Image (tube, one colour):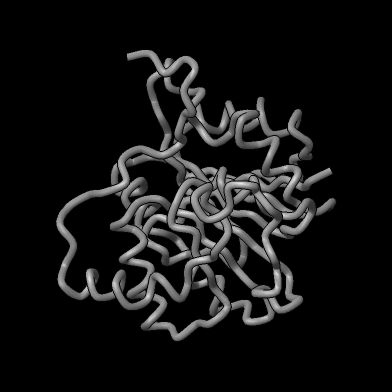
Length: 229
């Protein structure tokens, strides 16, 4: 079925295998208090800008699609002077993250368990100082490339929400995703300031389970850093 005229998602399914009992507990007990309010269209139909008092005046970082959450929790623990938001629609990943938050005891991390475009709608302009896109869904078929995050549909709102000079990091093991990132990100308002391959990740990088799987299967990681103009 053609998706012409529909709102295209850069992510795939939102549920996976059956959750463990402990993960169901995390969702029932921890998700509500950590979820930002006023983001969904049901909660905020007028799309009023998000009140940033939750950030407590600290720099605001965002991870788009945090997977199992290991990188997001690592960044929160390593940067207690920063407030982080994780946006992820995949329920199993959210449950995994909540378990890691309990284990790490971090308190500077908030969640949007849904489509990041709803978050972009209500983020005040220029509020983000760093954004992470780690191993996004590659959408390998050519007809699905327009579903990738590195397209104008996402990059325009992302650029608007980021401050001048803010850093946008992209990690992927898919060569064609690298190609599209080079083609689409600079015209959206970013400059490429660094690019590296294996062994060239950021100093504070935590290798994720997705990266470890890529390495086991012989795929080569790429790390790209952009600055918002």
